[in-house]
Length: 79
Image (cartoon, rainbow, N blue to C red; front, side):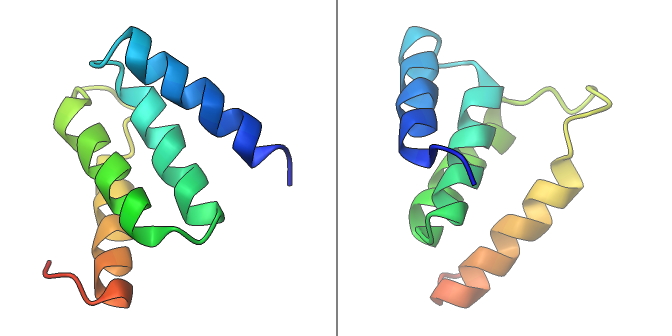
């Protein structure tokens, strides 16, 4: 399972150092989901979707959008 708290610290530092670094928000969002913090996950993953270059072949945009929609439904947020 790993050290999710330690990883979160790393992702926070990466995002602070470069607020436009999309992968930090992706990993941070996924870590929030693993920690059962879906609303925080939605925010971080939403930021990832704002920042990521859709032309990147490994951006996983559709997959992340689907996850965000599922999390919003689960928490009662509007989609």
